[in-house]
Image (cartoon, rainbow, N blue to C red):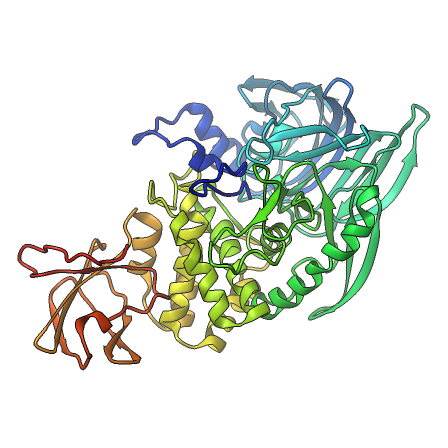
Length: 569
């Protein structure tokens, strides 16, 4: 998550890149964009199976040095091999079978000439040795790279955050979302007395003669590249076991040492979160690697099995401008729970276990994680409170660009992937109109696409099939346009005349409205005019169910479409 948000009247230091500067209407993409964001011929012939990453971090000069062993399976005729590593980092050498191989650089991509035979189906390894000053993130997590900070006692505090920009900003890999290793070693060396916390489980700790320590972590399951993390500080540690749907889950917590007592209270919300999300989404996806919550000098990130936490132990969403937690929904429902624990942990299901193949489909990560906030409120306070929360976030939607971005160039779409994405899912829940069935759909997504990379079409097809209705035009409307459906209506002589406006062709979405006082009835608007009898005390008693994310517009007549004051948007 590269986070949120612009609240009217509040300068919140948490504005997503996609909102902080609008893109031109016709963005020009470059050769560098294509080789970064697409499955190039130099990527397509091999699949990553294992990364063996070893990195030494030097905060004194913002540099790193290390190597990565890239083990891969050959799936077709070999070409040059594309390995990604972003400037200003430099490759020192590459080896295969103990022999140096040659390579050429094209911006942030290296093209490797492999002299050893590459028979289809075989497994080979290339080791890349590299060094250099790293890109320092000044506004992490919104701009990617390393964070070199100090804690309040003046001790080094280091972290990485690179969603969107890519893991190749600090280590060499196949920086392509659709290909994940089956497992990974992460061995990080940091100066004493720092302790590194990375993903998975700690396998060994080696104290070196040069007053550094190497922490070797191991991830036993697939992991997407941008989730791999360095978190180094003077940490305290505590843990507890959670009796979950798949057995015993170890939950480890890593606050700064002087925040231990505060963390023991605040981090208990992660247990409540786990109970709620296992109910709605199914078992936590990483029982083998455990769950960790790690305090970081940036706001937060969904680093798999090592969730980055920087919400300053505040309930709500931390605002640097006010030094307090704020309610992102303005509904009153978002102030009494820790936003970062909930949102970032939701990504363990949507983003980490289920991962978009292309950056353009990041709404799969952020829309579902946003919607999880609604479900968490529902777990705490009931269905109506959860609905109030997600409906309350609609003021954040800008409709500046479609949610889905351009494919193959490592670009996401609009920041509306958060709030519009969450409200799309809330609206689909109304269409399903069966909470048990809706829960089965969410849990079914987690089961069907467990530890997989997916496309938007995969998600659409699954939900439509399980819901038993064709939702293609609904997804098109909310994901691929900047429109929100407008329900136009007129009431005269006890007759409601109505239609959809601002919708895609053949838009098909029923909606609940008040045809009589005090109750909602499902109707099926279309682009053409339709009529139905109403029994209302007055036209002002007519309402559209607010759980449907639509605009309403009351008109005088449909020939001119002249609106009446009071339509809602």
